[in-house]
Image (cartoon, rainbow over all chains, first blue to last red):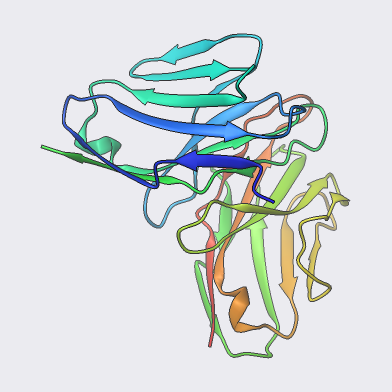
Length: 113
Length: 114
């Protein structure tokens, strides 16, 4: 059972544009929603995370938008740069439990000049 | 300080063999996780350790998989009678408890079963 659905599978954005990746979850017990960035041959690295008590969180060029009623959240990358080309995973977990992460299937982002 | 390290980085084995994968977490991190990432997929949870004990092993696919963390630091994932379907990248992550959600991942071990 896939509890976190992620789209699109791949995304091509022009340099300077906005990259948008969407995720939807099923388990209403989830209360922590991180985004991870992964480069080839490397492990995932935390990019930004949000909890359901806020609808938006911004860190530099990266913004998470969260819609609790729709059980959806998205990652926006402003002014996308070639160095942002990577695979992005959304994830979800239940805090103060074992906090194991349930990941989406990933989005391969390519930023073209 | 050093991040999470995993050894070996690559492991090629034959079907039916036994393998051990090692994870060194960040010093002082009491929580340790193992995930498995198949090609083109997101990581999937295998097992979680809090200290020395396996607090949640619900993600282990079958009894050929076993993991230990005898001193609450280094962990070893053990796979018996490997099958071709076990081929994947095995990721280890650690986090600082209490109440810390950030999991720091290692680079993974790429396991190939021929």
